[in-house]
Image (cartoon, rainbow, N blue to C red; front, top):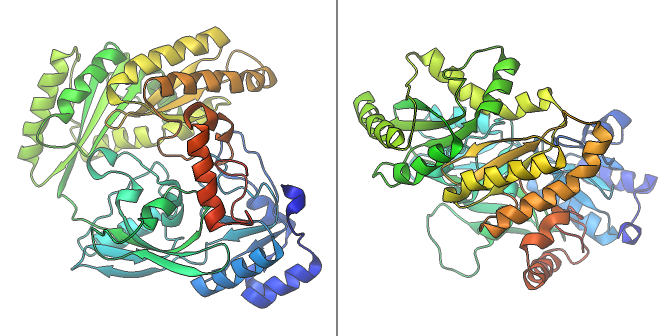
Amino acid sequence: MKGKYGQVRPETIDDLIAILGKDGISTKKSDLENYASDEMPFPKPHLAQVIAKPDDTAAVSRLLAYASKHRIPVTPRGAGTGLSGGCVPIYGGILLSLERMNRIIQTNRENFTATVEPAVTLETLHSAVEEQGLYYPIHLGEMTATIGGSVATNAGGTNAVKYGVTRHQALGLEVVLPNGNIITTGGEFVKCSTGYDLTQLIAGSEGTLAVITRIILRLSTKATQKEVLFIPFTNLQDAIDAVPEILRLKIIPYGLEFMERSIIEIVEKYLDEELPYHHHEAFLMVIMEGESTDAITEYFATVESICKQHGAVEAMVPGSERAKRKLLYAREQSYHAIKRFAPMEILDIVVPRSQIAVFVKQVKEIGQEHGIPIIAYGHAGDGNVHLHPVCVNMGTVEWLNKLPQLMRLIYQVGIAMGGSISGEHGIGMDKKNYLDIEISPAKLNLMKQIKKAFDPNNILNPGKIFDL
């Protein structure tokens, strides 16, 4: 496919400067290198020929119209915090950084919505809407991620049990199609049956169908109290067995996480902090919000009773705000701790909640057969399991050579249990070679036809999710 694309020549740079202005274009080697990879555990950098930084939708439109006319590949990029290579310019061309489109357009208290540009970060949005007594519920391990990137990958996070994932918060979009046309989808309303739902099609499409330039988000109000219940178990199966019963209660928890002893030990070393009950084998962390401490305390008492019926050793509510933040921070730092611990890969398979323990057990057996330890933790409330095959017993080259077969076997196990390859990180370029395990030829062909309808010249983020 690479040979079918137009080349970025000196006159191309001149044309792009005319479109975006001199400060909107860079060909500096240091810039090209900075935008060549994302946060994949083992980066696969690719250099663009030019970095383009439009500052409004009209500029994005002019840029894409030009790129389409000259068949130059364009790779959209937010903060570069993705874990699947989704914003890496594998065919070179133009790296379209949306970093200058970082304005909160408006917050509507009456409609409980916020309208933002794509480079607004999650932490910026959280702060801005909370000043007005409102709340945006998506909380990721990396809060410097942008709203545009989280919509493009349909990011999940720890709050999905109660609030769902990013697409459940995206009410409408303004996007630029690969030919430069600007369209809007959805709006400041919560339901619509007018034609195809393009908002939900574009959400999660990883920048392959259109460039998102504005997002209308659903907001809610924030509860006044937030508490954590930390529950150790003697084994993961007992912990997971308690989850369905917890979720059958009339009150839905804010988050419901599971961890094993191995990740606790790694996080303790990374943070130089000792966590409670760290000598036990498995843990649930129940995060709850409410309007009163008494209501949360009553809920936690019920959850504790359920868990002890399923073999929980103990249950603990942190006794201070600092202790609570310490537990939550420890869970958020899991990825960074493992990354520091050893060379590793990350998989974010989702399986039916009841299958988590069985899935993890089978995955660890596969790892043992290949001589590769696998660390597991994740979102017990929605079945999203984060797996890290780590390189600790062999050379890196041998480990890397074994990884593809190991990952294929793991994906096959998860899909056989009714799961899916990615729960929240997306396919990007890192997982596309495994898509055939889950997606039938007929379904994949339909996806490719949708891509061609949006992008007949295949210029927009080519090589991601699948190859044409």
